Length: 108
Image 1 (cartoon, rainbow, N blue to C red):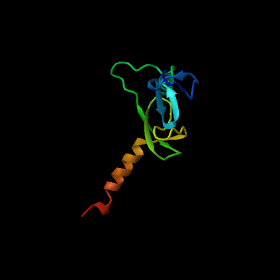
Image 2: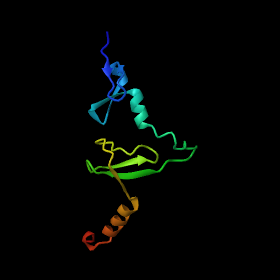
Image 3: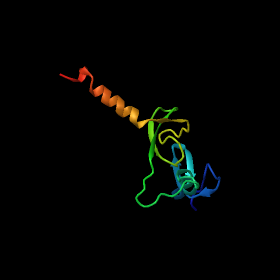
């Protein structure tokens, strides 16, 4: 008889091939719960043909990684699972690069 594993989110028991790790070894969830977490909320309109969702850039306060998340998806760090994210501005990085490139330290 197959060994059954309990999902940490819904509490139901599943065989190992129906379970997935989410963010860490402690978060062993069933496929249904993983799909619910990773899918966008229902109130977000579906994208039409040729339309792309914007990717927003966030910095995680917990692990300090920069993560990109499509608009409408849950804001959760893909590295540590943290939910305290700060939105980063794409243009400020470009402006800093352009400014740094014009400095004399790079000219020989």
